[in-house]
Image (cartoon, rainbow, N blue to C red; front, top):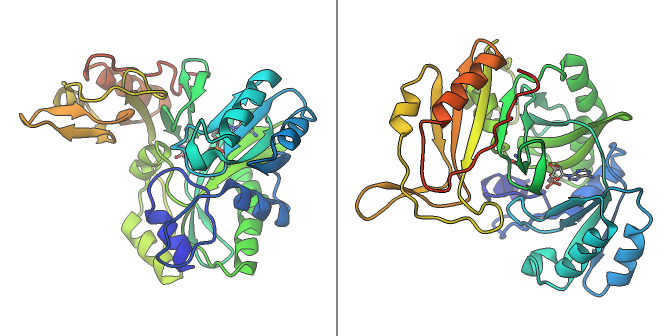
Length: 350
Ligand code: AMP
Ligand code: GLY
């Protein structure tokens, strides 16, 4: 238990793994997949391989039906996942990961998965150590760098909530088939998990399947879910930590959209140190908040970029369309050389 709470504090993109209290946390996708299989949670078929097993890994890849996913077992800041229709490209990733060339030790163990198709959905669930979590409102994240879901995976380029195609029945189904059994499986492993369980889901024609869990709020999902919360987040967190969620979670009817502004070169090699202008003008717009992710103050006191994903320009509005309009109007007031963003966040649903 203590170890998993540590995980919430360990920043970054991780799957939870068993850790001794106080130990440095190593995310492990393989461990997570084992839990999913044990709990009979719908998930992609997978195999996991480690250094020296290149041949076995390539042979497993060849058994998959046409969309290949290769993931580092350890943390890679959301960038250790290759999704491709090319068997050759997937094979190259396997070789680069296992040799340590791509991600050092984080890649020397990897997970290969069958690729799933369908819209993605993120469900953040408050957990108090029991096997019944309390779901927050679903959100949708946009993982690829480019418009129309093209280009490499990122940590997330934008998000919105509510999600019109994720009604209460879908949330109930995910809680019953995925989250509940997962919390029960964790309990059997001696983990009474308290905190936020983040379920990354793919809504496939065969029903929702879990792509991954994280033990933290999602980023940028958090930026669109928490502003919509009408009940008190601090109260919910305190109750989760004390082991008994009681106060009902309530959400405002308003919609929220966030657009990530990223650096030139993100995700491969983001350039940093560019001077940022226009945040005040953006926040002067109705319903707009700009969250900082990768910024710092330079010696002369000016604000400069300091990471791949730099700012989350977030807007509330009476509808998704209006929240989206505000978010983009605000985003366009913020500038620095090489700033990049996706233009299609929440476009389809708005
Ligand atoms: P993960 O770190 O496991 O969440 O993977 C990052 C992103 O890669 C996901 O949000 C998906 O966009 C994509 N992805 C991961 N696993 C799969 C899969 N089995 N099929 C299709 N896309 C996937
Ligand atoms: N937006 C994906 C994540 O936080 O893992």
